[in-house]
Image (cartoon, rainbow over all chains, first blue to last red; front, top):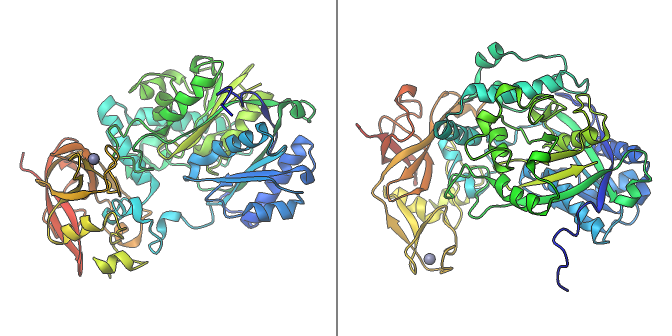
Length: 387
Length: 157
Ligand SMILES: [Zn+2]
């Protein structure tokens, strides 16, 4: 059967519920319990009984299997389950996979989640016993050990090619911190950031300092995806999933993307082409964006990739308060991975929902459209949400 | 090289990570052991490719050959990692890690370290000597019995 319409999933599904645990450097409960709490909170938010859940999606890095979540929350027969790879690149794809399942009738109530004790647990890069042979054999023996080192390499090149400065990266860190200072659930709620603090902070990997890096967080989040008509009967105003995309560019090599023709053109560009091809609106009509921010340089790279400015203009875009409330494109309005919580980007999805419900702690007036993105640099994904 | 290919935890006695090769990458490390920098090329269409893989993305031939490089390149980018790091690397921090683009094809890039001499430490060249575009040439450092990595020396100009 031929594909009738490439936009067959457009606005067909909605996010009807969101849930989260507390965010902290250290939570007592294990990841499995946190996962169950977040999932149950999201279902309660939607007003849907857990026995109705028949689809699950999460990350390959998620330690709690759908089997464990399903039996703990009392799900019924589950007919669709999926896991997406590449760490934070999979965040939006979990929702995208549920949309594909629900829109094609394979399931009717989907739950996506991420639970992670990255604050009190181990740092993945500290393992010397487990090395993925590709591409680690080309990087780790040379002391390029951590994601911060891998992105630092791209950041230095980006600064060299386009005249980006540390002040531009500070603009990103500050916008996220300012929003966190408005969000009582954010880990950095009571911790303002100044330019002086940023410029004198210790290095993590030159040219990146402490404040260019995301937080280390224990926490879990979840959301519920249902058909749009079902969402209209739920407790909250539906947030429609307008378009979704994943992105794996030609000749891409993961976070150490140093080997394609143009390493500064990352997966965001691929996801964006697909997203905007199918959307009813363009980047200029995006009211608010939640852009994956494990590291500050990912923001200018993503601003370019998703078409908010031209190639090489992402750093300059951050000037003049453009990323703040009232600016050209308010971003990461809960504080993002840099200042609310770093749970592989899932808090960006839930914050997008809050903005379109009108319930964010840093509400953009009359926000009707929101872009949510997943990790740039790794194979990625993105969502366009609308009210 | 066989040892490094099969050992699950591969570090030097001092804790430096050894390359853990896969089947595609093994020839690179074997040639490095002979102090030769060779890159995988396609026997059918002649194009070089990196990282190594089973077949040519351009013409889909599975016939490959390993072509000797001049060993010359330029710094494409560089970083100076600081702690927290694995202990062996933390002791050297801040050290350098670079990406070098090869003279034969600037799209062929290798992660490595700039050193003052082949067997010198990773923090042996002052930070102010680094700049993007700086010419470098390859040298080789034997990390352990049968395990050799390419490294880079700054050219005089
Ligand atoms: Zn070929």
